Image 1 (cartoon, rainbow, N blue to C red):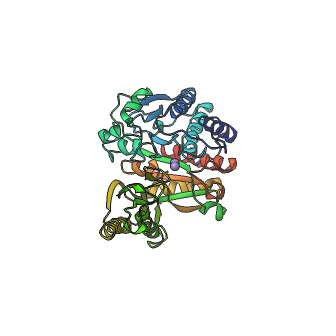
Image 2 (image 1 turned 90 degrees about the vertical axis):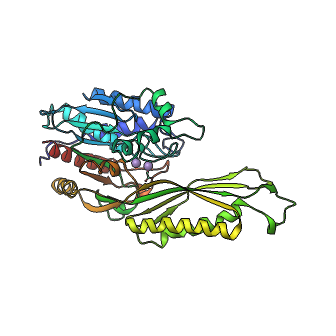
Image 3 (image 1 turned 180 degrees about the vertical axis):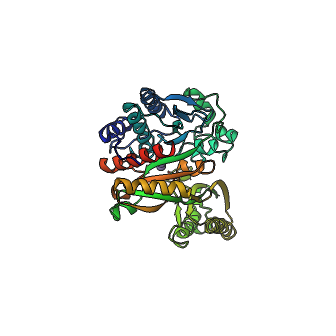
Length: 410
Ligand code: GLV
Ligand code: MN
Ligand code: MN
């Protein structure tokens, strides 16, 4: 592997900062929910940069964007990299955007040096990775890998009843291509770690071996609205009061199921939302994660049994809605080894690591040999406006990406 070629860290940083300004937030983050006008502006900006880097752009019916760089033998399946540029409601500048712009930077460097690979290269921007405005999460890559039916994804609605299909069309990103129609030779995604491990160990690169599986649910608790003053505590059918012990029980599942156990309740709606009305309805999200598929199932079953027991105990209705199951991912041995070799060759400190966060690479690994490259983020904080990463680490991760893309497409 040649180390003579390197990416331009300042150009990568400047692109990250420029994209981050679209939907820029007060504390230096970004808010570009999937398929909104701001996401559209971000896509337009990056597509312009992709064209300038000599890539030919195409879209599929999921609004996934592909930028193709021809090789010497275009009958070969492309070596692909990519990530997402949609963000959390108060997201940072790096989650997803780093993967896309590091891939872009690789394409720019190859253009600068007039390098032609044997296999073609492609840079993908996957639609709606974050799954905030529309569920399921990792939607574009899920549909591309045939893990999520296209119809199901296009019919998903946001809080205002707008569908993914309508929004993809409205933004002009509804392509002719059937998602997953073109083959992928192999896939590499670079991302900030979004956790504290690399920073704590003072390592520059995480060689990602796998990703925690996820079970996503909504739980709806139905009681009865009544006046906050005249109704004695003992006879209330208070949906919030009776949700709280169940929430506590579910959150405890994250601690009691091994080191990789995680349980999060990130959305709670309390209705009708009046100070002096006892809540008649509570709807909350449940996000369970584990590296072990059986243990993850066990966590999901325990959450459901706890909801059934709460219904039995309180007489209120507890309805559990299964939204999405993503099985734990094990990345391909040869790809992981290639990332490891690139770190060694560049002299970057590195370690093997498991991702707690979901990534488009999870779904793409179902159809092509895949692995990921992580770099540290400040204090392990992500899904937060203050998310930050050191330019030197971002540069290092992009250099590893450059090396593996060149090696895989040689
Ligand atoms: C994606 O960011 C996830 O892990 O939920
Ligand atoms: Mn991400
Ligand atoms: Mn994210």
